Length: 276
Image (cartoon, rainbow, N blue to C red; front, side, top):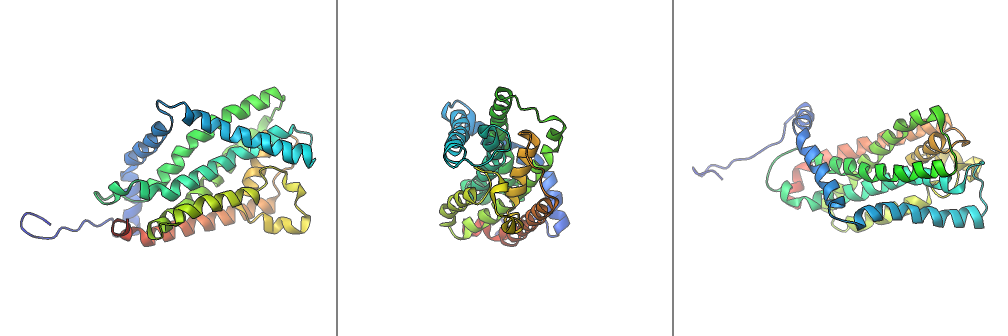
């Protein structure tokens, strides 16, 4: 309400083109929010960095013992720790980004109610901040590759493709969960369960080749299957290449997830400030 008693209503860009122009105009806010999340996680803390390293490392040890030693699953001539950690790299990024996106709007409720900016910036910055954890884990992967004398060669240049798919998949799912968490507050408890379930239906602790042939087409609908297999092929060496059908299905399911997330987020975005 203005001093003259007139109501002032702040509206976002009315057209779709105006909204995407606003995203570019607020790129500095995106960078600030992403950097804030990174500094909060790592600045003046030991546990933040330690937990980023310990969580995937301990998961690698458990999966190596269970699937590699006890179950005796194949690793195609590669040390089982390398096989597992090459899969944990994209999975930890995906899971962390989804979890952070899911609660990002609630965590930034003060921003939503005070000033206008494209709300999509908040979950997108969470995905960008999760890349910091990914880079830290890359250091561990490099150490494992040196220790086990793994030379990926030219295939390493394909890694950005699979990382890009993981980014769009995590952002699409994160936008859905973020919007749903505003309307249904118990969703913030559902997201970790969904992510945990996804760990067991993705080939993190084992090679995709152990999946029966008749189920591989359906299994490839999980966008992270091609991403994980792609990381293994790019990093671990001696791994089967990602089948073309699996890559196509991964791209299609990622595109569907991303577009659905953007659509639902944009549809409900105007009510965020009222429902927060």
